[in-house]
Image 1 (cartoon, each protein chain N blue to C red):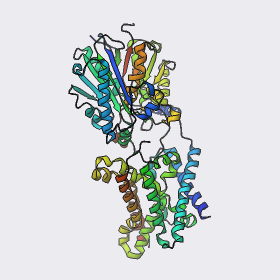
Image 2: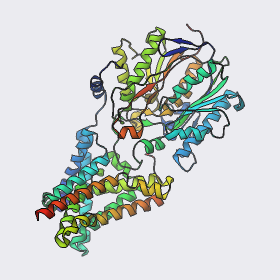
Image 3: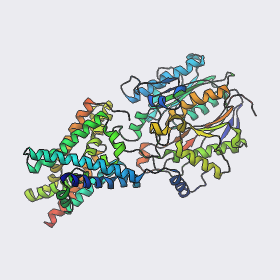
Image 4: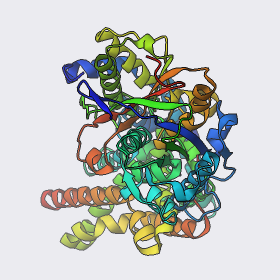
Length: 146
Length: 340
Length: 117
């Protein structure tokens, strides 16, 4: 069996491995992702209607969505949604919230410092790190060009 | 004395009897097609404990006691325990047997551990070092996901090639008494790595090792696939089974007629949404210790080749981009001794 | 009309993510990083702003919107407080989102236990 080249075997594996249905996956991601954004729009419009400051509408909207997603994660609903929607529930800000709440719950047995405290960032940590790094790079270039 | 045959095999001279077995599984496995064969089906995946890791150790402890009870040998007559699991440092088994007060060898062969423990147990008895050996292997879906993948509540899709880690423990009491069925020979697997890096396709990573071990068994004993009523691999799943069949065909062996896999047998992929099948140490351990053990004991299967398979990566090696080596240990299990 | 635009643009951004997941086997953690970084770069180049004006929540709710907010925050901060804005702008802009997310995560860990799938 060791005689077989890795490339040959890789080809065999690709043939034997079932692929997910890309079209169907995309439709599900489109509908759920779109709906989450719609809900975001509803929240924004509501805050606007009740006279909240135009500048902070984004903050309020994100906060409400993050709270809802965190609650759904705790109830065990978000993983079910994610199974159906794939990227449709990963890409919106709700997916970011889910990526923070899920490890926080999972690692509580290891204590509140090195369990919850450290592991809460296992997925969000990289997002924040590279987000901030990129924003600094954008800032430096913007400052030089200004 | 045991006779070494060919490059990888050993034929036992003494009677190595599988005196008794016991299988405990979680709720999902209990709902599967083999549900009615298991000794204990837990209603609660936490088994009344505070964490999944503690639950696994409790399952190990209770199930091993059950196996010994069924053997009617008595705990004080057990000379060694050989056991392993998937958790870091083998903690599932270590904590499971810590109150047993019996000499213990902790094993790690990933999902091939049950095969490894049976082979080594057989060698211990054959050598005269032991009369009775308790062997076993366990895994826990939630504890394994937590250690190897992502948090359970993270909303992700599992690719269709993934397998579902079985929750449970399978254990057997091996004895030098004359009692059917018997382990009559073993073929110890080698590490085989054909460069698979996708940790979501373990069947593909393990298939070359399974094919290698089965092929060596045929060559060492100079037999053909029909020598066995059934060849049973551990947790290759649908993808791995197909690949193993193809790899062996290229070597000139057609096993498509008498080949199955514990991972394929344990779940119904459609209603249970387990994709390619079951996996984990407990997959081969529980399915053998219930369903197949009884079949061989009753003589419905006279001679089987039992081949638990393991993918020997760690979460660190995967992150470092290493490919995943596989291993498979084969045991010949027969209803009667001296069939040939 | 607001809602239709948000639905279509938001949905399409998710479809890009889905194609990446299915075709490249990227884990969701990598997708999140990729989307925030690209949103930030597009925001810096001034290319994301029009999309936000067109689709509103459809562009701000998906993660590139988070990246866009980082870029916009840095640039605004530089405009108002000069060079220190490079250091403070990003975290200031994302402060609310991150704070709410980790507070909710912490509270959830007090209340909930992980659920088996």
